[in-house]
Image (cartoon, rainbow, N blue to C red):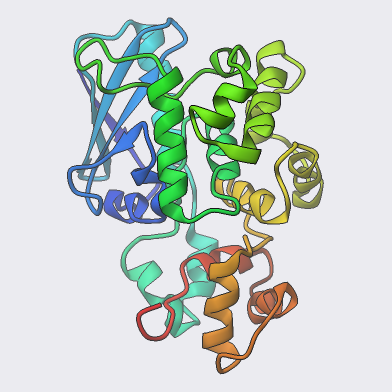
Amino acid sequence: MDIVLEAQAPFSLPAVVRSHGWVQLAPFSSSDPYHDFRYVDRLQSGRVVTWDVQPCDGGALLSVGGELSSAEQRETEDKARWVLGLDQDLAPFYDVARQEPRLAKVVENAAGRILRSPTLFEDTVKTILTTNTAWIGTIRMVRSLVDLYGEPSPEDPSRRAFPTPERLAGADVEALRKEARLGYRAPYVHALADRVARGDLDLEALKTADLPTGELRKELLALKGVGAYAAANLLMLLGRTDFIPIDSYALKMVSKEFHGGEPVGPQEVEAAFARWGEWNGMAYWFWEWSGNG
């Protein structure tokens, strides 16, 4: 079944796919990481389907094997629109980006949208798994969670959906720590899954919460395992760009770009992009750094 997804113009699927490393994290995959992607999704009906997403004029073409019920099609379309940020209006950001040569390619390439998972639960777990580890470690931990606890695709059992909160809540913390090799992050992932599964935490409601960014940030910081960097990363995925996700990469790049290689701290990173105001996170995210980075 093919579904044509129209986007708020301008739109570039390759720009979304290469916006960051999420396409490398299961259950995403890509034959061409700069062009298209696949995603294995578990629908509310319990059915597991695989998306095949390709560029098309004015948006993206999403293909799934077999037919979907009307409810399944609506759910799939809603999820895909969120994943790709199809309804985002980036015109205000483009207006300011045009004034900065280091952001010129953002406008030129119709970039600015950031690939995200269908649920904030999945993105929160993945963000927790980016902390205090190399990127290869994040890839490994996410793959382990999917392989151990995700439901398989009927077309290809080697492909699995991201685990549901209920599945992870029912997992043993020590198994998460040792078998999935999450280390110290295991209790955080388990606690998050347990709260969501029990209905004590409605993460999905935060997508449309009518809260100032500062208040939304407090909600995220209240989650175990989510610190300042993780909260800022999640805010970016939610379309809130007031905060910069400051990690070792940010410190290194700002040091080289603005301070001649001298050591810097979070304050220097924030100061480097402060003039962008509500768009400072976007300016940082899509900045064209000097040299090779």
